[in-house]
Image (cartoon, rainbow, N blue to C red; front, side, top):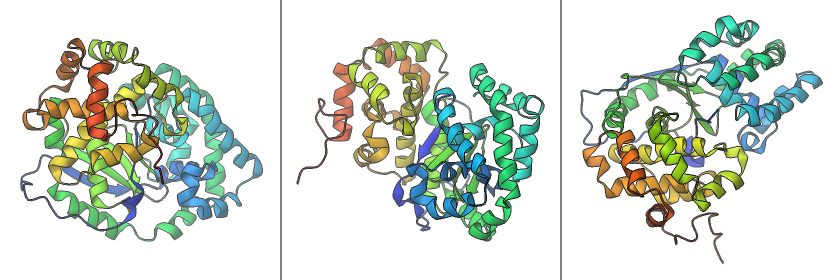
Length: 383
């Protein structure tokens, strides 16, 4: 499974609401729908309970307090499930949301009920989605009884009460985010820069335990931390709705992958980067980095963008060199101004040799503001 997660900037926890961009139009193509979900939060809490530093930096105290209520064998199996999931389907809790998100997950009870008979409750929506993968499903179906026991133990330890004590009342925050998003027409820009159709509705689930991820799930929906500022929400939406940017099993993507597969730098990044970030296949990296290139342009148009050099230097140990290169090429072509079919653009760029190192690396270097022969790993600052 190509992990469709967006790692939000560490500075995203502020609650300040950005001003509506002056060029935003009253009639928006985007219908924002903001809500919460105890079920998704229960799944996300498997991150902190795994003991991984990526999650403990945000939730160490919560994880320690709740883990003490769980049986020792359940705590051990959570760690084992993470280890088994990564080579099979990717990061454990984001992958679970992909499988389960086709059904309402209003509570931990709903998660447990779905896992009792996944062939009947989970498979129909998952198989009908763009994320269907027979091998991934085989792993999930085999593992579902173990996963269900974990959630049963969490229910017995009163996860619902534990979460409520920490979230407080999310209603005011939901309303605040809903109102602030009204001026940001993400769907209009996604349609323009991809040439694809998008449903107007975007569903956002505000969670307590999801940092540092923003996760795309089935449909036009994603998960994010409740205390992220609205600029971060817009950036996550601009990114997550794009997956996949082109059909990854189609001839255009395959031709691009064949070219990138000959690039020593890009293949080295796939092979040697820290696997905790995901994107451990070339296909997964192309999927992610095309979305990042496009979301950067959308964020710029909406007035919520980060500096691209800073963004891609800091994110995921600087591994998204391909995103910077694709973004640089799209900027050269004036893509934000004219838009069109991104699949047609990728096909033309591949045929013209623009994805080869001689063109792609200099384009990335201009964006990243460092030499083409020092794109990755990111050079450490000198004193």
